[in-house]
Length: 274
Image 1 (tube, rainbow, N blue to C red):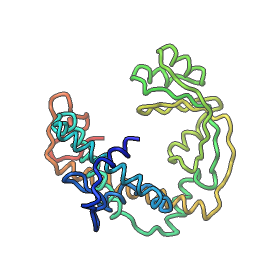
Image 2 (image 1 turned 45 degrees about the vertical axis):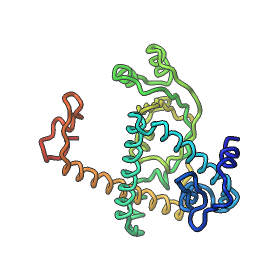
Image 3 (image 1 turned 90 degrees about the horizontal axis):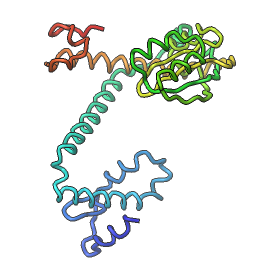
Image 4 (image 1 turned 90 degrees about the vertical axis):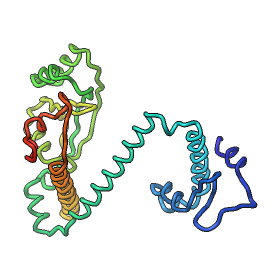
């Protein structure tokens, strides 16, 4: 509802933009590139229909941004900090994409077969699991130690209640073809009714298998999954290795009490301790 009066008030047909410029707002402009970037996540068949609404959204955003600048909001310390963070996130993402692109190589049939042999949970031993699952906030070290002693889901619930930790309980479906092989191995080792507790931030889970159906993948589908996972593993490894090399080349100094344990133990120029 805000878009229409803002646009109507600023419209001047005598000075209509042309070329790559599709709208002007005071001394600023919106180009076709701005519009295309805004619609990048829309399906191609929807972009033409959404075009006018997207332009209205861009114009309104420009107007509000210009107002914020006129009020000095762009000099607010919180804004400057958030702008720096967003810039660094975007640059880091671009760097990771460039490194990942350089790591992509053709994957041979032999590599696919070797990967499937080493990871049977993807194809021949693929299962669809039904889990009784508890979800709760990442606990502190003391609670985590208590949870390690839990032998059943009832033990987990008792521990969480004793420490006044809120949790939700639901049924979850899991395809082992989409899980890391080490996690598949842990699921295979579970005794009946034994919970697998996974501590993560912000949410942790306790999982008990209540049903398991063996559903092997056909050869073609299994090969596609293997190729995707090999490619992901290669790109992740490349990004991590390049990141580690850059970290070792950088001059990094921490204030007292802020250095990670690995950094505190490392000598200058030596790889961080794991």
